[in-house]
Length: 402
Image 1: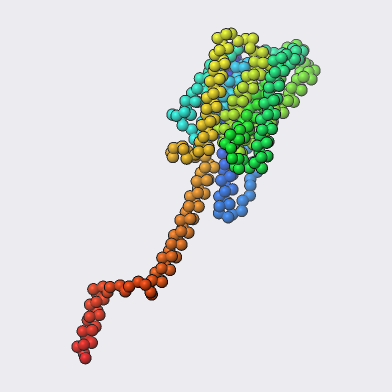
Image 2: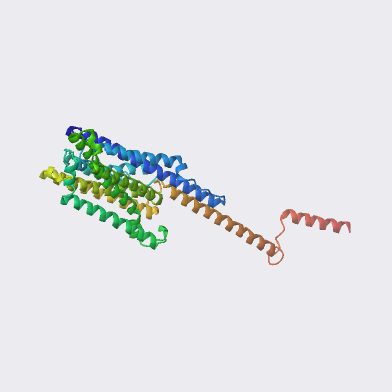
């Protein structure tokens, strides 16, 4: 590929992160609206009929936007190296924070720590992109097979597989211990691990998907250059990699959708962005051996930029968890999530019912006291001047007539 076209690949990838974050938040908004409708029906005693997601237009729009944005991002790998594009995945979290605040009214303080961490993410990503290698490579079947037996490729596969299985079994164990009811989890660290496991699993599958997509594109170009169009039909390796490419993408979508139904979009997408960035970067450096194209200065800048961006995203995720676990600590003027609005309305409704019943009870007590004391314990009221005058006048008339 022409090295000068890497800015086009960067632009395509950033546009894809915008589409994915917007699609994820539209799905989250649809889920919250359906939950609100359910709680309002239960609160009023009306029957509730769940609307399947495929019949929720907003959810379907968000889902399709997320899917096609992810597919579109793959085109960026034609124009830029995987190692360069991987840090751009953190823009997914940046745009997600914006859409979560605007669409789902989730807390985000632009002039506070949230804004500072966002700025650090952008600085770190820019550093990594500037320092990343601008080269791109194509491989034939034989060259790719040789690449797949190198220690770098084996190390990458072992790391990715171990990470995915560890996350999956941790999530299953936590859910089994709480009988699949996360609200009963007592320890905050277990709740945090469960919430972030959805995004981390999706990010791991996403990082693998990016690496496999790069492999498929490299094989296509390499086979065409060496054997012509017929080379696309004589490469079993190409179709084997393509199968796992589709599988990892489907798993990524499934886990992301599941996470958006359970917790905040900011938590899911932040863990998704960091994990996918790390896995994709390791794929480019270890699998495609981009480390040989780093100079001393670019290595330092790339590592520092990547670590800075990851640390900033972790800080943002920590702030999100604090806002969710302790909503009362946030300023009163901050927007609320749909679920918190539902909770607040329920509390207000319950308080109003309690006050009304208390007023009724108080009125009953007062009436009972009035009835009791009007006949027994209360002394007679002193007569008013008008009444006294009428009484005296009547007595005077009676004495005169007699």
